[in-house]
Image (tube, rainbow, N blue to C red):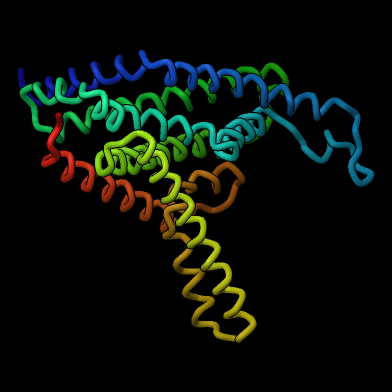
Length: 277
């Protein structure tokens, strides 16, 4: 059997194994629930007759099917639902199997270790695609039923596509941390510490920008403006601009590519030499 055939078989086996996990199935059930709930909430808000500042809510919202799609996607990220499942599944895929001493069974296959790791990443990416695909399909159909065909569909389509890329990159980061730490609870803590540190970095840049404006130091303000799109948070949130109809920023995608590539390289390098019991 050739290497590409081996890799395809590995991807299929890893995907079946991942989808057999209760947490993976619960995540997909959650996607179904959210993609049903959010359009219904939007429809209810559009038909309650409530007023805000003298304007009816339905007029202020201007709800349509594409808005239902956007709200579903934004809620998934705002509530940290999708990312939480990626952290859990990515951690279980590497650190969980390492702790349970089942990872060695994968290494007995006659393929490079990097191919095994790539298959696990591909399986997790497949799950992400299923999660977002389910959300897109159900929210679209229900949105069409509730609101009709009006509205712009291009931006939501791009938002979901880019969200898929962002979350595949996030999955690479989770796998890299899991390979380096190889402990389920510590890996989860490590991922959250990374996210917290990135948040503090963003806040730090904001503070620098405020101080620079008050001190009239335009060079520092310009530095903050140029640096912010390269933050990991900006890379992993590149989808947001499409969801709200803002111009896309190429630096976000460059940063996403760098973060994904660096995570994959670190994971592959460490996975190559670790001793698996």
